[in-house]
Length: 245
Image (tube, rainbow, N blue to C red; front, side, top):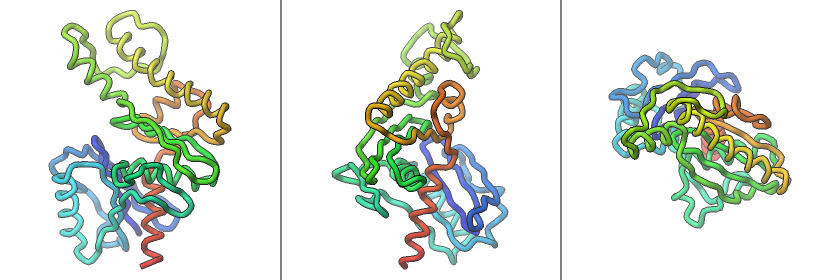
């Protein structure tokens, strides 16, 4: 069995796979004091793979848990590269691109080996486009749904709202609805523009992944949700590394 971990700015996700079968999965806030407290598969693991965009402190705490639980396994730690298995990175300095985006680009392209647009809806909403030849064309980074709410709350005196999630882009009729549905409208506007670009540029697939992928899919038609795109990419690069070492 293999443990794969994706540490985001807000949330840590993990899954255990045996071949092509996901045996177990879980997650917790990245800011949690302890990691993988209830994890029960330590003795059955053969490999551990990790991708993280979290702070050095969070990474050190996680690596301490991994080494303490399985000192015999050296974790594979993914980094952004200029090239992987037919996929090239648009960044002149690849190390400046978040490894989560890079892994999603790899998995998105290699899923069908054709052009795609990948929208990862987490703390930030990232957009990355890959050509039919595997060339990463670049993308966008936008504030995510929760970050937009926090920013609005922090920057206004009298716009008060709760945590209710409303799946609608209708006009709001109170402040909470105006905020929730206004943010939904902004996200939908991004997706609709990407769909128009998809038609113009002949992009074959529009993938949505990340914690808010379900919300986006509920609001917008014509997207393909892939829940574990970052972990899928992590599996690809870690398996490649294992084979070649």
